[in-house]
Amino acid sequence: MIGRLNHVAIAVRDIAKASEVYRTTLGAEVSEQVPQHEHGVTTVFITLPNTKIELLEPLGAESPIAKFLERNPDGGIHHICYEVDDIVAARDALKEKGARVLGSGEPKIGAHGKPVLFLHPKDFFGTLVELEQA
Image 1 (cartoon, rainbow, N blue to C red):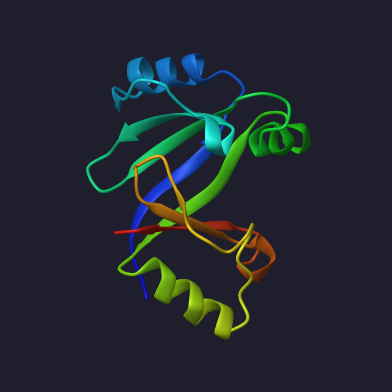
Image 2 (image 1 turned 135 degrees about the vertical axis):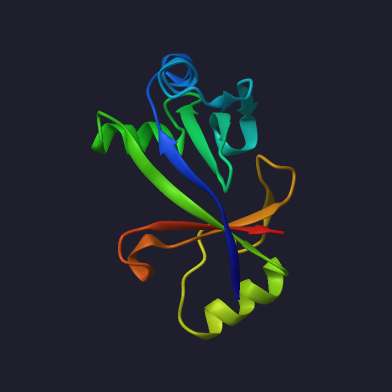
């Protein structure tokens, strides 16, 4: 069902500072900052040869990333994202197997302009899982 690893998302307090560390210290290719108002975050993508790293900074106090940073003041890994061929079919199969889909259960458009869903971390050993339509 799951395809390749699309990205690993890291919550940060200062996306400009984090971007600069990846750019200058690690020599990575870093995208521009993009506000994702529907998701309450600003994103930056770091391109690696085999996947991406997504940096997430909260857009306001109600952002899910703001809540994550309250519990994890230094930031850290927020979620992992896997690609799926058919997000609705994947959702239905996962729900049939007992996995919980967060929110309404309907895909939303994510940072890459493709449908995404999130799966409850308690069903995946404490890891928030994002599925993205390939």
